[in-house]
Amino acid sequence: MESQKGFWTGWEERLSALRNVPPVLKIVWQSGPGVVSFGIGARVVAALLPLALTYIPKLIIDILVHLLQTHGPAPKRLWWLLLAEFGIAVVSSIVTRMIDYSDSLLADKYTRHVSIEVMKHASQLDVIAYEDPVFYDRLERARVQATDRLVMIQAIGRLELQAITAIAWSVAVMLYVPWLMLLLIAAVLPAFLGETHFAFLGYAKNFSQTPIKRQLDYLRQAGATKEGAKELKLFNLAGFFTNRFAKLSQIIYEQDVDLARKRLIIGSFLSLVSTGGYYGAYAYVIWRTIIGSMGIGTFYFLTSAIMQASSNIQQVFSTLSGIADQALFLTDLLAFFQMKPTVRSKPNALPAPRPIRQGFEFRDVSFQYPGNDRMVIDRLNFHLHPGERVALIGENGQGKTTIVKLITRLYDPTEGQILLDGIDLREYNLEDLYREIGVIFQDFMRYEMSARENIAVGKIEDVNRLQLLKDAAEKSMADEVIERLPRAYDQMLGRRFDGGIDLSGGEWQKVALARAYLRDAQVLILDEPTAALDARSEYDVFQRFAELTAGKSALFISHRFSTVRMADRIVVLENGRIAEDGTHDELFVLGGRYAEMFELQASSYR
Picture 1 (cartoon, one colour):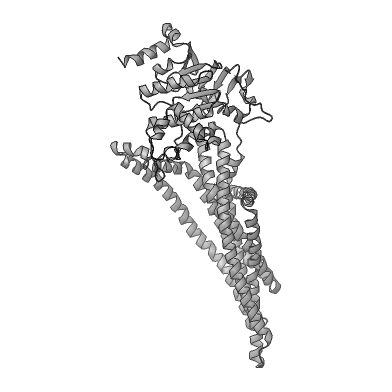
Picture 2 (cartoon, helix red, strand yellow):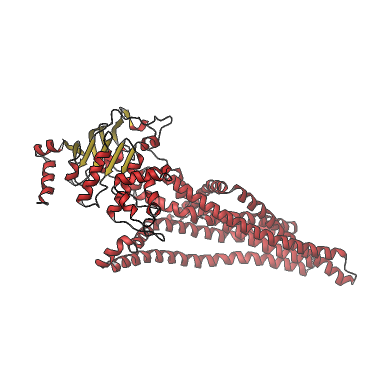
């Protein structure tokens, strides 16, 4: 009973998945309406031509039989029929090549279009979504489905051709013996049901394998990257990674083989039923010919029609089954496109204030990550005034980076309000707000692009304004790094592409800092961006930072107290709350948590 329930549930899911086809067809149409229209027209022509190519030989055979019986002269009609068959064969060959050509164009257009759409949509989703492993699984499946489901698009084209051809041949058979079509369809159904059932099991298997496949992808990267090569050798990790990959891939292999074996055995048995139906109809036509109720020409045409009708009906069912089951794989792609960001601009949102007059204020702000009960920020009250430099310090996990993401509205608070000039941050236009904030995170991107582009990503519309890029590089002290490169600002950075030159961690950080200076924003935020710099270089960077942020709001995070002292105000975070707040001298005299951490670090230099 349970297996029957599972069987019918699988069918419900399969049929339900067909609802995925129209949205995908819409995407296909958007990728190339001209190519799609051309392909449809060519398939209609290609579907009808085989019928003509079989009917003309039937007429020729009838003439030849008559000639053999009468021994009369060959009529001109015979040669015209032969010429017509030749012409149709030529057209059929050309149309087939035209279909292949249009399919090739459509494949390129669709792959390009859907890949761009996935990238665009992913960039619009909430940053917090990337903290969720379930989202990563869905995103991974969506990325794969975006291009791998090209086979379904091609199957829909085949289905159109097969359906029109099957209808044409079926009509031809029904004109002679109507009940033969019922026999052919009944014989095909068992194989169709079996194929769709196993295709559904294949989808369920692939869905369940997604987490393991993500682990396999990670192990491939961890075991074969520049970053991991050093530890891989020094810690002798090659065997560990290889063995784990082998165990996980063996699980995938065994599951694949088990399903393939069942499909082979049961599918082979069901195909016998289809073959039996075809040969039953074939035998009936032979019998009719033997008793003289059919001519040789009609025998040739009808046996060809039965074979073609049977073959195309099977193909229609098989292709339709494949499309239904391929459509199951599109569930995540379409669900991905249906995801909407929660952090977005409201209609008629306000422009960011210029200049900022009151600053940012946190009012009883709390924040927790999805699926985690712990409050990273807990009823926090905090003010960043215009022109003020504030340092956030505290142990790891106390909410420093979360505050940065909240103030930049990458996240929205779980509770409470964040105000800018007395107005809730959610009332402002996001893009306009981002233009007024320059931020560099500790895990900044190292773009495998030119030095010019690596800086310009801070304000990409200025990518061709070289002097502005040079000014920003000078402010971050990246100019000295870039001037030493063979091609200066046109030098490709990183080792991924030919001619690329990699930088040290500190050099990359200076390039990244230039992005923040390029924005010339009212608020500058540095989230431990100088961790790879030596103490002297970090001191120089922050000295420059102090000079360049005069009159601007600045928020920075650093574990080095020599740089923290430059701040106008120091905020100490513990358990998502402000434990201490004041200047270096005030907090040092207080003798609390800040003084303890300062003394602990200072003692290591004595």
